[in-house]
Image (cartoon, rainbow, N blue to C red; front, side):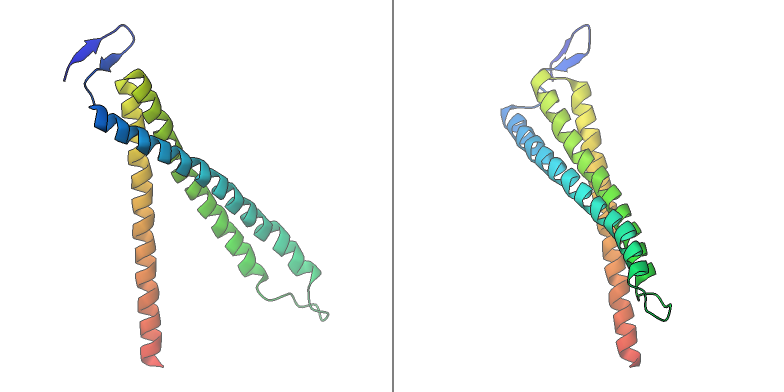
Length: 156
């Protein structure tokens, strides 16, 4: 690896060969698309959550039973709204990490900056870390769900 030193930062001239640079460029391009689409979808999910929290909670008051009872599912809709809001926040951070990886990878290829490359890989690591944790949580919840269905069906 040939290192050229400049005043501002170290530039790694032979950090990646041409094929590696092409693959990194394509990965950065798709990461930016995933990041932008994910941020848009997380905003839509956040709006849906606010609609659940505000809209349906006020709708339960309007559609209450004449005897003074409330519409069924009112508190559950409110809780679902908060769950959607949490999901939107998590999805936003995952998408933002993908977007930052794409931007920093493009910057690293344009400037041959090791600092930009390190920053892009840090964001890629964050993206995969959060995604991996979410996959493990999802698998655990699915396993618990299957076990619960199995136990309930066994005793019925």
